[in-house]
Length: 380
Image (tube, rainbow, N blue to C red):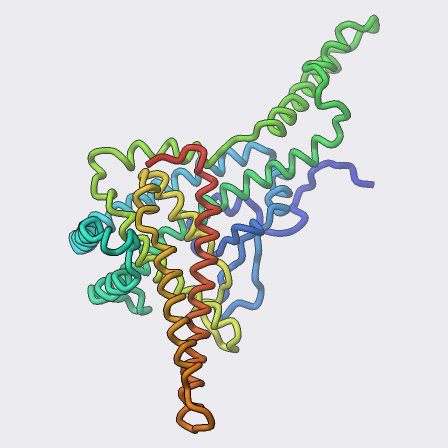
């Protein structure tokens, strides 16, 4: 018979307490899936077991350690984000990066009408190439690669906060099911023990007060919950938009080349899934979309980024390329060896365009979903 008492150890899965203490390691080693609310461990050649973190695991941890770890988790996340935003600011303060972003932003503003208010994809490709010329590390990663990873880790931290809140709601909903009437008046047991004719012991009276307090806490948490996203937005937004951080105003201009960088990386990672000795294998990385949405909200740059119509520009580019390829396929001569080879090449190009287009659509949907988290307080 289940006594409904928390055990000394978790039933299964990772312990939120350990993740909280080593959040910098967790956000670097795990990839977040926005729709399923699950973290999947990064796969390397040495990996034989893949760990995952689900809402159920978080609920088990809260059941074991108590709901107090939720607020502690947010505090740890705040300290982590504070360190990461220092690096974030230093990157955008670099003269090479800042000058390129200012030049691109000014160029788009001057040519927006002739570009039909859509930031050109070719311009973003050129930006990527220029950043790579500044140098790469031993693993072949450019400065933009490292910046993308930084934004992704920030998004993973926010995803972890979201999962902890969802796990807390899961725990509370399971605990509240033992209370028959959620609309009952507060301090019910204390009132009953005080109004009855029987004299109860001091311990019984204190126990009734404690029980009322626990029930009241569960009812409040179940009815309201805490918007941790809003807390972490309010605490950082004023400083990020302050006069001494004006160099951050150009962040929106780096998002288009950064999304190109992201799509190329995740397509490579997915391609490795079919190979025996693949490295850096993963199939989801929604932390990037959450990170971009969160930072745009902090900087109040949602409107100016929307003005780039970036995802519309990408769709138009790949749609146009696929139409051109299809036209060439339709005009190929019949029964020719050269035509067969050309058809194969064009078919591969068509498939590549479809993959890129689908990946950008997936990123757009994740980004749009992530923006909803901050939409109630959305500014700029």
